[in-house]
Length: 193
Image 1 (spheres, rainbow, N blue to C red):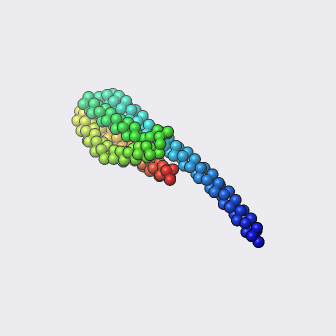
Image 2: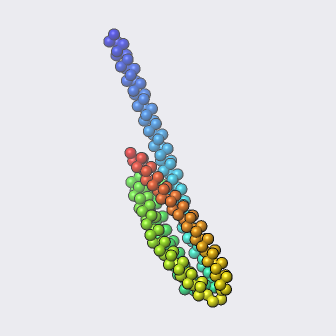
Image 3: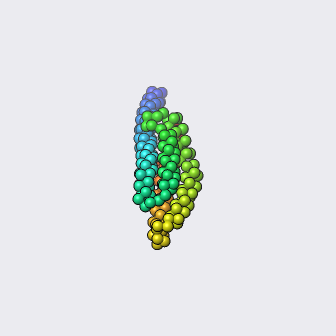
């Protein structure tokens, strides 16, 4: 009878050992999946941030050339280019806080948290500047005597449509970036255990 109990205990210990090995293997696989998801999300976030930098550069080139062709005052063109340059520098500073792929998790977590906070706060400065710029644009267009009133209304209509589309796309992009950064912070938290 004692031999049967010993044999059963030994079998149970073997089964427990095998179960522990399987669980450790599962933990390694889960960690790999989490790391791959983290890398994928970080890569996507970096790509979106780089696209914003490219978009500001394109806006600088197009606005400068378009407003020059439309014979807008030089002061307005210079103010627009300065505003876009400040946006570019701010975006570059914010993007700089994103961690590299090979960063340790603590550094990555701090960088993503700083990036997210700066990105969330950027709208507090961007929207008031945009409102001032729009007011200046309206003033400049209305004071351009060479433009007939119908053309001014058409210009404002096009600007309003562009503003609405830009705001929708910009706010969607902002929401995606903030959401992606929150996902990354959660993934890092899971990876750190």
